[in-house]
Length: 239
Image (cartoon, rainbow, N blue to C red):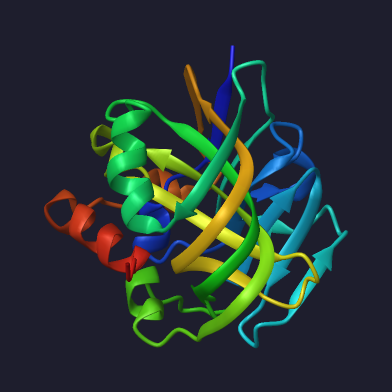
């Protein structure tokens, strides 16, 4: 059985609940690849084979070794026998969301993708660290640092979620990027890559882990009338 482990929901970020509710030590028990953010929306987290990297608001990539560091939201997995090798002659968000998603029949499932190669162009955002009283993710993304580069070799890691779960996580692809030289990375807004290689996996299970010891999570009211639109806007795809 292959599982995607997701700690909390992206809704907590929309609702400005940005305190960390799981440690890296605990998170890595559930997967060695993934993504997330640290307490206070402190940058973009990329996890590759148990190595944890944070891209901070200056664009600096930091290798994180303090396993007591906490995250309010994260998604991780451990590759299973369901993982398949993948080669794409050309890829961008449009291809992944349309032709690729149709070919792989992703409409009602969760999936992981990892792609490595040289990218013609990459644009990322990095959430800047916030202090209390926390603003919402949507407010933060309106003034977020955006970085772009060309002809960079690196890795895309991330997940596909079906529309059915669009109020729990970001529907479609949620992807992060890290360059091989660890000089560039972040939450992927747009990219163009050629001759990419990697892996792809469809999950037959979703383990949704809730921060039940956090009173803010237990007690806050969710505005379902605006949630999905807020999630979509905060993701900020630009393809």
